[in-house]
Length: 215
Image 1 (tube, helix red, strand yellow):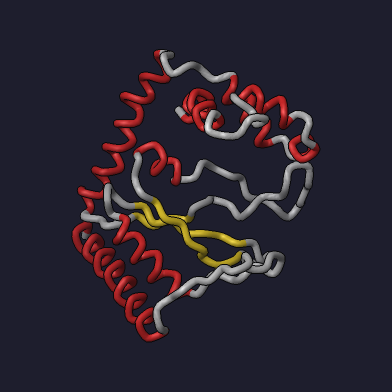
Image 2 (image 1 turned 90 degrees about the vertical axis):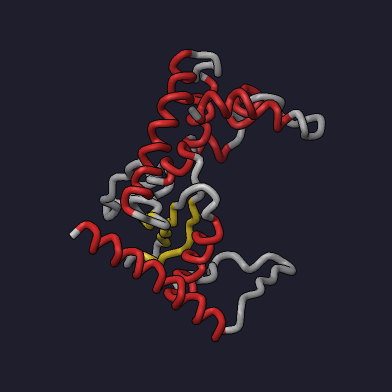
């Protein structure tokens, strides 16, 4: 669904920009084809072309996916929540660590990337929060996702914050300094610890409850 929607909707956004900017997806493709970055790393350019070649918003296949396919994914996901009394579903954001850049070969990289479960959140229109979860043995970052139901953002933010405080998995970048004037205010350590402990305890209690129900 995203490909035809992007092609149809991007002109609305581009119309808000100043003169001289692209006005539609075709203009973006023409501009990207002259950019050395997209020549060297053509992944995004190829996706632009795929979106440009996609069907219109009145195509029967698109309308079927929008009306029936989206409802199927959404209802199946919500039934998973209600059927198991879940507050959140926690999963690795990606099945693989970051892959080598296009054009580069790393014989030690053996992982085959598969579609991420974040697609479920995108299609179903459900909230999903991603936070740093640590690093691979090669020091490549990985993230974890918290998926919830409609309007469960407060709970998800609590779970994500609790995970961050309990694991301290994030490392400041060694390649890029903080933005000028950037400040982030966090609770006092004692408050953060209490919130983190409470959040993880809530998840563990819910998880234990689900296990007992299955048994």
